[in-house]
Image (cartoon, rainbow, N blue to C red):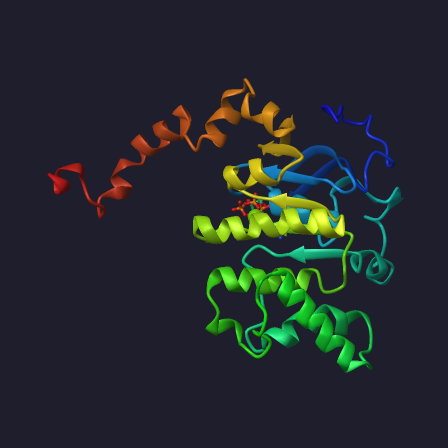
Length: 281
Ligand SMILES: Nc1ncnc2c1ncn2[C@@H]1O[C@H](COP(=O)(O)OP(=O)(O)OP(=O)(O)O)[C@@H](O)[C@H]1O
Ligand SMILES: [Mg+2]
């Protein structure tokens, strides 16, 4: 898949297709004409600076947000105009790992995992549900944690339980919003391996939003970089790694731009309460 020219994208180009998407909140223009397609069975990674609209874009993929302008397709069907009731059978095919994990603190691990099942059907066969919870916990390496409450789990364990919940309904598509943020490198890599395993074993299609380039390079088949509400670069990992654009290089190497440095210098007095270099001499 090469670069996609706006407006030329067709609803059949992928399992999810976003066409010429604009999103505005009040006066804030967040997305300014995004067109992309997500290929079935592949992992598409979306990168870009904090606040550039990655979460907003991902929310549109399951219509948790509605476009200001533009179209969203799922399996060639236009979904952004459907009502909540019509969206339910579509959303049930997705797993969503929200930014921050978002487990319910008042529910134990077992109840958290079956939450999406309860939303979609009435549970009668509790033995099967017990088995299902066991299987999902085993997949994420959290066997035996059914009766723990989120507060007693580490950040990495909470993410893995949230992932077990995201796969409770055997989704064809999993959307991961910052799955490794806040985790140490080893726990991050456990999540990367899980994403790869779900793709390999369950053939899931994944969309992953991340800041973590190590993770992006490891899991991505296709990388899309957002900048100021538009797609600035799109391609496979090698293409992105060697991208000639300064903004792309600065982002993937975690360097601040000249403009950012200038802003920091101007705002110098704001940092009065912090240590000065001479404090360390
Ligand atoms: N419901 C909303 N109402 C108003 N503004 C919003 C809303 N949702 C998001 N925004 C704004 O849209 C912009 C993009 O937000 P978004 O959460 O998508 O950023 P992001 O790229 O996911 O950032 P991060 O990497 O920090 O998670 C931000 O300026 C945010 O404040
Ligand atoms: Mg976000």
